[in-house]
Amino acid sequence: MENLDFGAFAAIGAGLAAIGGGIGIGKIGGAAMEAMARQPEMQGKLQGSAIVLIAFIEAVALFAVVVSFLAT
Image (cartoon, rainbow, N blue to C red; front, side):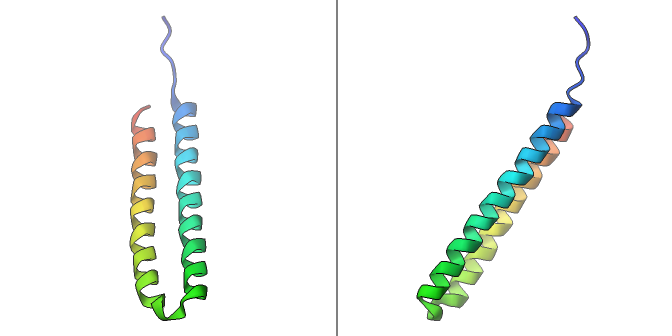
């Protein structure tokens, strides 16, 4: 059996992880903006929570990119 090169699959996986992270961050940002528009007095709490959630999503997406490149 030949040795297979999984570099292309790793690149596709990294791209999907980046796209997924971007979609997740966009959804959080949109929901936070809508919530702040409905209740402006909650802006500080919502903004802090959104930043923490965005950091978690970014960490998971970065982890997925690293794992996909290590799998080659």
